[in-house]
Length: 240
Image 1 (cartoon, rainbow, N blue to C red):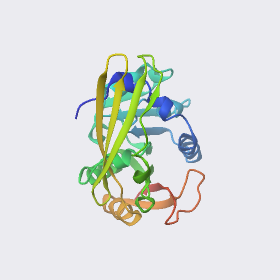
Image 2: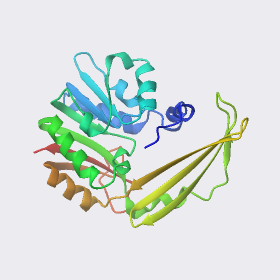
Image 3: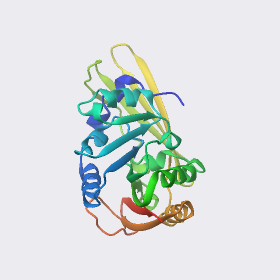
């Protein structure tokens, strides 16, 4: 697929700052005494570099050259091992913990998702942990993402005008089309992404088929038990 525009990658950490999700992952890593971690779909590496501890090995994997270039240049990026590709590019295991943050799980369609889970299991040690989040499809969050008027913000490349279109073209499968227009030049950058909204039962079934035992499904990053109206499913599983 086409790679991300480098000018938009520069804005990624502003739109997706360090927050309760990153705190949750760091806390979990410390709780289980993880000495080796792989961050699958690491993006700009904001979470990845924050997982580094003395004696801990951290690997970041992402299919975007632009994202990984940005990640490697950030403070702390020199002590992380970066790998270009999807889950098939994971190397250096076995790992104590595998992470998919930023709703990475929703960016991977079936059957690639099942293969991703299998690849991650192979990269984990016996009893190794996997954590990721996915939006609860019953809340239908995507219905609030479109329809707003375009917004404009200042960037290092001049004013940027942004708007979005959303299309649920199949049940639980949503196409996002993001429009990014640089006002000074009129250049329009269009990014399309398909998101998979999976039910909890489907996720647990796929994890079991891949050789995982689900240990927790939380409804938020504060470890509140999941209910049907929770916005998120924060899933913890162990290699069985």
